[in-house]
Length: 471
Ligand code: PLP
Image (cartoon, rainbow, N blue to C red):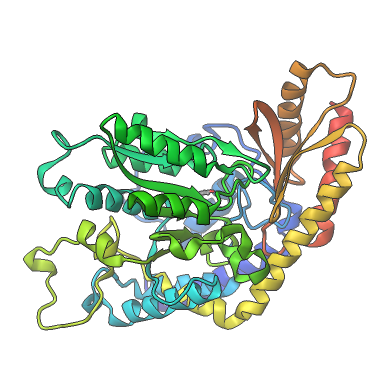
């Protein structure tokens, strides 16, 4: 492709992007295609001769776009958000254009130094104290894996990486059942084994782990010959927003010298608003904290901020310096690939910089406060509606509810609510998902899309009621 053609296409795609966002409300939020439909429309073999951008773009519109679920739709209330704001998209475009590999300081000094500054801006923004440093990981899953590997090696005196795990003590890691499945995967990949992920019971409305039960589980494991390695706590669990009592968890961790990782992948963004920080009181005592600006801060995927109180332990676990990666004669530099599992790294700091400069923290705070307020308002409306029950109270902008008319038997309620979720998503005006809590199938509702308005949120329930009435 000639660069002149590239410039023409760049302008055309920018126009397309604006038109897409201007008309996005007219699209069904969740893709309405059947499994295999898109695959069947794609040629089975690659072309031997190129047929140009015009043809590729036409096929993108014809074949790909109908199979897209619109995460940037203002009536996206499913899962957690994955926001992309215009300055973030533009920054990612620039990053794609220069396409640097940001693994070592010398492979792009500006990327490394901007990353150091941006991580510190984010640290200040969410109220973590001075002394935490950090790294931008590709995902919270990677950050949690890095944390689990660090707790493993710290406990084994860094022998696991060298000798392997056979013959080592059997390690134990502790979490509640409210944590994301990325924790289970990290435990598998780190060779600790699912059986050694000890689930601590939760208590109270916050669904946080019971510190007394945590202490008892650790003491029992030590008595049985296991070696505790660490605790994974969550602030804003995926299902219903469960929050562990971080301060009390850190008290127990300190008693046994255990590493604490806090997964705040979704809720961490809200900590830019000081009034929400009591959700994670004590977080400054954790060793490792992750949150995803790519969820609720408009810095599009991928962008996970991983903070560390003692980064030396992480670096000692992950750094590997073959001759071809040595940066001779450069003292005091950071090579961020030594802080993460992958070697290659995208230039992610640029979108953090652009978003913070365009909106400022106040702009992002206003967005989050609106989302929380509208979600709470909707929750009250549903609570006041006959035949509907709030099952878990709002945690920031997430709550769960279900349709439970008195005439419906308990066993039919689960099936009905699942049918309701599917029918709502087939309708396409809004998108919601379900979860299971205390054995009940419930509808999960979160507000987090950057362009959502109060009307989008409140009217979502009109859609749900209308569809429930017709089922
Ligand atoms: N932790 C929590 C609490 C989450 O909700 C999620 C995803 O929604 C993750 C971790 C995984 O995030 P990622 O996709 O960045 O790995």
